[in-house]
Length: 326
Image (cartoon, rainbow, N blue to C red; front, side, top):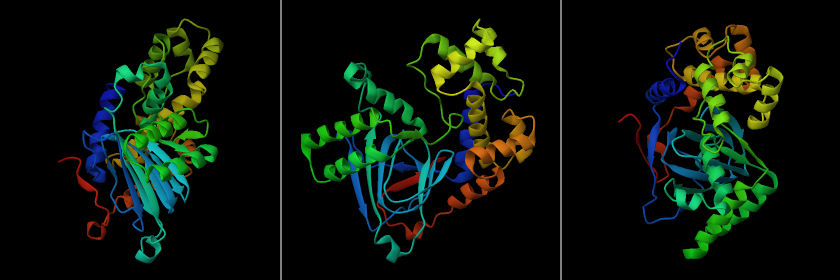
């Protein structure tokens, strides 16, 4: 049995950084900037798996390939809009890396500091939606449909304006994203830290109990119901209302997210990873992993390691990177 989810998270994160050669980006943002906007044309994505201490909003107007956000590995194509929080590693892999293909690439990126909005500002009711958006962005968001159409135009307009007018437009972008219904998380709950500062003590205790015991294959909803002094049926309704998921699905998602971390670490076999993540049946683990990730555990690990290959000699973008473990 692991000590705590928090301790394991730190240990596994360090192993992942070493195994995958994840880099830290030195962003061009200074303490005098509200944000920086980078309009990249005819370059595409040519950087390694990395992370940084800033929030990042990425608008892909023309490009396609694979997008990695934490343990989320998906195909992306033109008209893709993603917001990620600080410290989560990520990478966009172009399908076409030939210079003649890159001529069509167009990506606009906005970066802003996690210190931009202090608690005094975020405690004002008008900023509640933005506060919630930033907290939840630790798992990454993808925006689609009407939200994408509105924000894509605003971001392209933001490239052309400066001064306080640009700041106002930037705030409008964040607010529009914060109230959007056209968004979904990318990384799983088991892969990133769950922040529930906005929830009540009862819900926090419930989540803390699950985070401490999720890798126990004997964890049952009856255990939490007893902890909460509720009937199993009443607790099930309470849990789904507070998390928008059933207890079973929530625990499965946590276990799969944690398993995704361990898969990147080659010290464990797939069967060992299954048991360490709370699955007592390897066949059930493989089935659920493929159902949720659309790939097998073995192929997932292989795909991520292949994406880690990077040719520094061909880098065209001005971004600077340093090894994360240096």
